[in-house]
Every structure is written in structure tokens, then in C-alpha cells.
Length: 348
Ligand code: CO
Ligand code: CO
Ligand code: CO
Image 1 (tube, rainbow, N blue to C red):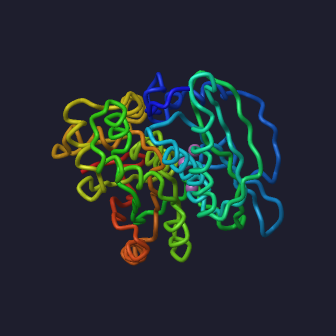
Image 2: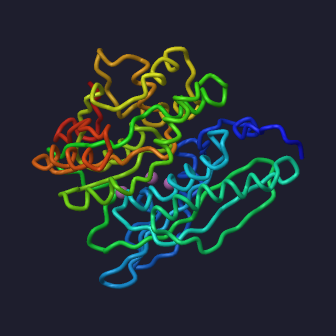
């Protein structure tokens, strides 16, 4: 192996950021399959959600999730931190407490030095430690493309599960991290993003949603999800479908990276954003004042994005205040659940 510094994002052939299957593709693969039935399965594949939940006793249910992807940043330690924070996030989005994790690794040992894998896992471990999670094992395969992530198991009280469903009319929607990391990851891969911005976005993506989840526990939260590959509007659409309600979004209140807005205006938009728009665009009405670049940012696939929390209207301001007091500075009320139009998202 040479001593030259390897840019991890350059080892990825496809789209850098969490390149998942196009939305809807997995549904086609699973549609009609005979899935095992179990009365203790409280949240399963039948209802798309952040994690599966299985009841063990009247007081305890297991929350299980798995996420892994190719590097979206060049620094191996940061990549490990981001991948772990992203995988842990689905437990927090359900209102759960993560307990154990397993590594999932695909590694090109012929082209990358094994010390890089060690550094990635070290980064992941730092986030597990912060989350109070123990690493119990894992699995590594040889692959032409590097991928890393975690399978995470957590606990939750069976009566306190926060799914994507259960929006109540009048609920306020609170977002806890800025959007635009997909566009910025694309810029990083293209060598366009400066170091200061790269550092800022790495810090945001590697920040656990733990504080946000612990903070919301004390409030009347009706539903929650985390913003990842389907983008802000894609994940919001999952909350709105079959809710019997609609949502009104104030785009000016959504925390965004202004650099991402500039790159979006130049057309530097990851393919996933177009997939997200094609899949969910028909649910959404944009006001005349919402510019194209803002629309693009709202479909931008996020890596390790923030929580999107639906909270009772009377408690919304207090929850934002509590989140800010925990250092979640950009937390903001970005929208409201309305009776009509049913199952539509109005972005103003
Ligand atoms: Co999720
Ligand atoms: Co996930
Ligand atoms: Co949830």
C-alpha cells in the first residue's frame, strides 16, 4: 500500500450519499410475499417505519434497525461516526433507547489498507459509547466497494412507541437538523466544498439524535421519524399517507444550509433527490413563492438527518425552547397538521 492520502469518497463509483434503492422499489420486491405472523410484532414490514418493534413483555419491547452505506466523506473516522449516528437514529425516532449494535462491513482489502477499516470502526465506537451502546459482534465481507454501518437493537415501553402515524390535527412539526447534506456530500465528492463547511456538515451528520429524543420524552409527542434518504418531503409524506389529515409547511422556517441552496441553483443535485420527487411529488403543492432550489432541497436525500417531531400545539414552543437549551440550536417549528386537504402537503 502507498502512503498517499486516500479520499474515501473517490473509491465510491455510484452516488456518494446513502445510495439506496429508488423509493418504491423495495415495496415491489416485498409485495405479496407471505411474511411470518406473530402477535407480538408491534411494528413490522406491513407499515413502513423507522424500525421494527417486537413485544417481549408488558413492559419491554425490542426495537431493531439496520443501516449501512458507502462513504459520503473522505475522513474514515468521521465516516464511522456518521454511519453509526445514522444507524442509531432510527431507534431514537421510535422513542427507544439503543442498547446493542453489530458492525456490518463490506471492505475492498485489495485496494484499501486495513488500518482504514480500523479507523472507521473506531469512529463508530465513539458514537456507540456516547449512546451507551455495546458492540456485540458483526460481519465483514470482501467487496469492491467500501460500506459500513450497524444493526442496532434497543428497548422501548410497548405503550410509548412513536411511529410515523398518529398525526393529530393542530400538531406542530419540529425539525432538529438543517437539510441539504445530500447536496453538500455531492459537492464534497466533487471537491467543491471548503474545509470549514465540510467540518460543519460532518459535525451535524455525526451528532446523535439522542438529546432530541430524550428531550421530547417529556412532551406530548404524537408521531416521529428521522429525515434520511427520502428527504424532508419524502419522510413527511410517509407520515401524511393514511393519516386522514394534511400538513401545511412554512418553508422559510426550515433550517437549511445556504451553501446547498447555491449549489442546488447550479444543478448540483444528487440523483436521489429526483427519485424522491418522482415518488412523492404528486402529494405536494408548492406555493408560487417557493423557489425551485428550495423545492430541490426539500427532496434532497439526507444522511443522518434530524428528527421530525409532531407535538401537541400547546407544547410546541416549549419543546423548541427545551431543544435549544440542549444545544440543538436550529430546532424550529416548520409546519402544522391540518384537517384539509386530506393527505396533501402544502408548502408555502
Ligand atoms: Co428512519
Ligand atoms: Co434506516
Ligand atoms: Co418513529
